[in-house]
Length: 633
Image (spheres, rainbow, N blue to C red):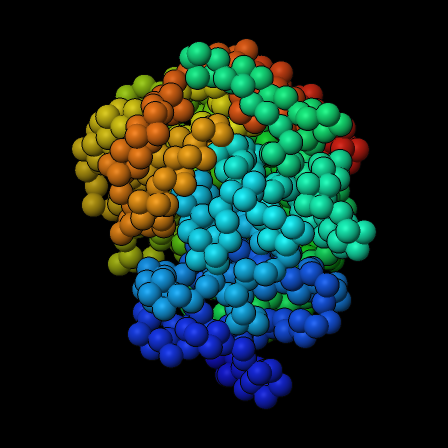
């Protein structure tokens, strides 16, 4: 970011905005590790007179400021809500342990950053569900706000606790705590619910009447209106809606991305955050159909923005924020059909204004000299690719549709272009995986190292660095592998150790994800409503920030789960029958269960499925009437 530009913007912002720091926390700010997390007053934050608005919405991110402020969904909905004159949306983040301790000691309730006021009496308390291990933070934030945890204990038309995001695809482990969940994309449905709320309040309707009417809106799931029955073996026997309530909740989807709301400014943080740059979404969905990838199936079909829209929005955001880096965001950036046209258009001004472009989520088979030249025109950084598996058989099982030859060609292009660092992401514990497949990860990494030294044009005196990272496979809802068992802790550790021993080159760095963290994530990814009691008990015993190494306590979690009468292996390492009723079967994201089942069976046969632009595979997303399903092939 241009530092001089930011200083000027901050100066003029402070002339016009009176920062409303929470008066109770203010005396203790200098005792906190990062006081900038709690003061607000950032560039482009929105301030309104609370007497002039009908609805106050607390947008809560259940993690620290640095992580939440990097989240694109929060940026979009915060700006969109505040465009509506009668809504004031404020940001709320989970206070870190030092601030939490002071809040509890001094009886300081959780507050919104914009007003500095407690969120206790806000009409809506909204959470984004990005990660299963943030669930305890959600309950802890409600406790800090003095809001009853369970929806049945909240009365009247206020404190409507809502949630959306990818983890809402299986909301059952949180069902007892939320009044409603938004299923799918939120730009339209969120505002429909807020408008319905205003009508119900004006008409004097009860909380129960409001929630029933919400259940009639596509994309809204009200868990209190559904009853769940269980078999003796712990599997789900029935899922029964109350009278007049839909049996299936269908996701909401935005088909026209050129005309949907997108901010022309972002709140610029006062402290460094995880992704401190302009983020421009270029399309939603993915054509590839990797069988492990939940996001790829939840967001079907692919819908693109035009290059003109992307270029205009990106330039506006750079001007309004002072950022000098743009990340072109999607699930697979090189699959954008007009990527070269877009990069040519954007470099016309980005080079002149010293703004760098980055393409995260690049595919191995989507990288060439033309893209390379655009990316290195301003700033050169490391390249990241995700082969996901070390052998071709395993890549066919997961439908990656990438060959070793394509990876080697891509790395060679990068090395000839002056790159010396490559990061490669893999998974271990995939269905049908053998030890040979695991060792293939190290072998593939060594071949990438060798490709660098075969390049006669490499920079003299420069050594290559290949970083390989492995995460543990977690079967997720709405994927072809949703029925598969997850590897046990012992299996994952054995494979990690075996792979580490197979790597002999110092030019290869090996990182891996902690197996215990993945195990607990697996519990909640495919869990049911009985886990609500587990999460509540965990919070009562002081567990939170489970995604952070310094807070994660696996043994205490296992103790809580067993004290609640449940077996964690039931959720993690158990193979589900294809005819089992799954906790999320009452929710539809447009891809049929039959298609997922057929893809799972193809995986067992090492058979791939063509991507959506090569051939339609009949997943069901064609019903949305647009996107890649209707492109000419």
